Length: 210
Image (cartoon, rainbow, N blue to C red; front, top):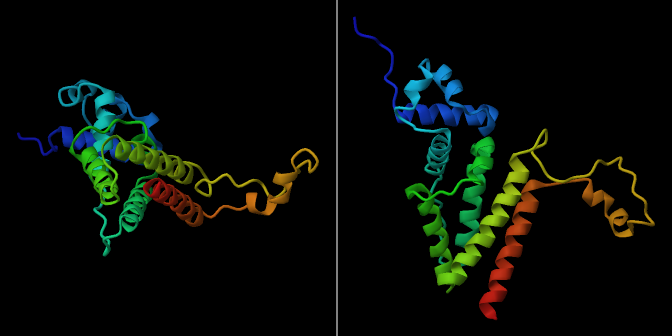
């Protein structure tokens, strides 16, 4: 009698890993746990994915492959950089737990190179090439990962570094901090993201004109 059970494949295993990461974070991933999720024997997973490290890399690639190409009706390199950065933020919002994982993986397959190529094309529009363009791309990536990890990886209000409005600050020891307690007690993710992005673009403009 033939079985109606769906055959085990690498794609099914990776899909299950992505779902598990989205629910509980990358720390929850194990071959044993995924086997239980898929109704399969643990050892059977190793016929398709030899180890957990590769499985996590494949899950990261799967999520990166979902990144939507951005569209912008402009020839200005600044607008392209803004649109690309916002597309990365949108991906982080769709996969908040998994986005933290992306920051720790070295994506060297087609999905990873698509976003690298898009970034380098944008810097090329501004006249930055070679080592300079790579350095600028890495600086932008550092900004995006740091900002977005802070935004999506914490709870319950999804991040930020806002202080408690009831914090008691020694005004003599920390006069500048005491003077901006209202600002330190609030956090607007949209504003902070766009503010930081404009600072990065202003730095690129300064480098370009220098």
